Amino acid sequence: MDNVTHSIEDTSASTTNLVKWNLGYVTEAFGPGTIASGATSTVITHTLNITPVASNIIITITNNPTADIGFVYVDTINGTYFTVHVRADPSTSGVTFGWRVP
Image (cartoon, rainbow, N blue to C red):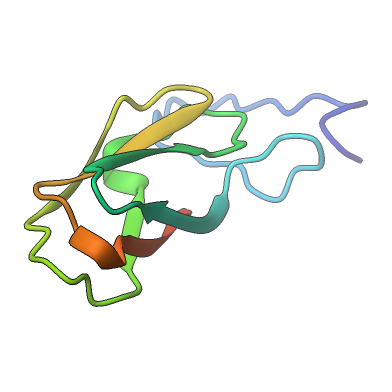
C-alpha cells in the first residue's frame, strides 16, 4: 500500500508523530549547496512535501573557506525552499556544504 491509493490515519493525541517511507510523500531530503564568492546566502530547494522546521535542518560545511565566514544560519523556511546564510563573504573559495532534513 502507499498513500497515493490508501490513506494514513493517526488516531493518537500526539503532535510529534512522524510517518516515514511513504511512496509519494517525501519527508526526508539531502543535497549539496554552495555560497559563492561575494555572496552571503543561497537558496536551497528541498523537494519535501512538508515545511521543515529550523531545528531539523542540518548544515555541514565541506570546505575550508578562504575567509572567516562566521556563523551559519537558516531562515526563510517554507514548503519549497530555505535560505542558508553565513555572516561574512567566504572570499575566493566560496563555501560548500551538505544539507539534510532527516
